[in-house]
Image (spheres, chains in turn orange, yellow):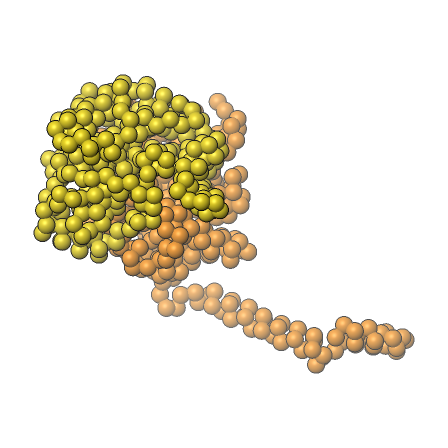
Length: 316
Length: 275
């Protein structure tokens, strides 16, 4: 048996095994197919072999980052969750994955990365708190910029500005897409009967973050919550395939609620206060020193050689 | 089209019947139109013919700039202008012409999903081959796209468009693909369509839907367009049921209708035939 495959993905939170849709898709597929992966849950994409997350590292064929490619790799290693599907069901899988990518994904990007309130309150905050210093100042804004750019290009409108108009159009498509998925799922446990396939992994990956991460601007969430079978479908997968995460969820939620409250970052606040006072004092001293209000004189040097004074003046 | 405008249009649309002088605008057929635009335009024409709605095809060099969404084709009906297949389907639905009313919920979900499959894979592949394959873009795409304009505008516009498409490919992760991989994707998409179609005459048995129009528009255009290499059309030719599907729609909705009606408009509406 070859060395285990290594999968790098974003760390989980909010009762999810990972916060990122692509990572969730891959994780779910690996569970469905029973692939023994060595999973590294990290918060620094620079430590992934491809520079982005998720990434699958194989011994022979290098590293892969797109979910579809990762799934193909796993399939090559004989971990195939779609083994029982008929040719027509494989065709349906391809079609519904396209539906997700074209209709739901733009709205998901919008709701997590572009909608100002959600981005500032939830997404940027999570990434800023979890990505190690100093990348946490850089990466969230970079991802934000990239996602906005992506929306612009996909919509074919270079002057696109986030706003009500755009939101309406994107959400209209996304709500329709969720309704269609719910109709297709019907009363079945998974999309193709009793065992999960790659389509289930994709749907779960895209919908689970919506279900679990509470957003201030939650129109998509409200709609998902009104579709009972889809909500049940995501919860089922979480309970069946990621039992450890769903058990952790309540504990985490409590801490989240505390975080959300007013006396929020009490420990952080104290630390921040001390840091800012130190910073201010440093800045004042620096200014005083540079502008010559305070000068440091090496008394022994001065006694011996008078020309040191000249040097100090030059520095001023 | 914006949602508010869409709601308004559909209200207005419901009141008026389909006029005789409806017009569909597309770029010049002989010298200018590109594979992807031609496919979208043919899909809309096929859809309107399936609905039995007459439309006159009008070629304009500046069709892209006339369109409200910047994409061709668009139709001008009464005093309304609607572009692209999705909104046009909604628009005709508001006027009481629909092909997908007979489907149940699951079938409608599948129909929408397959339409997105065509948009996501076939259309993107066409754009990729047109603008990102260096031979095709320098020999066919840029000269055709810029044919109505004089120097230096022709170069500026063509490179601007190419730059935009390439950035889009970058954003959706297609930039790293090789031409071979793109052909592979097309093949995969055709296999899915072929599986779904099976031995039925149309995707949802006896009645054509907007999905049939969309698939026909793309496959027929690929089959009848000459590019720098034949590989794209070869991919489709290996699926015999898709070929006979194209032939069937061509016969039923283009040849027979043309024989019945005046032949003047028909010759304008569709390019070469498939035999």
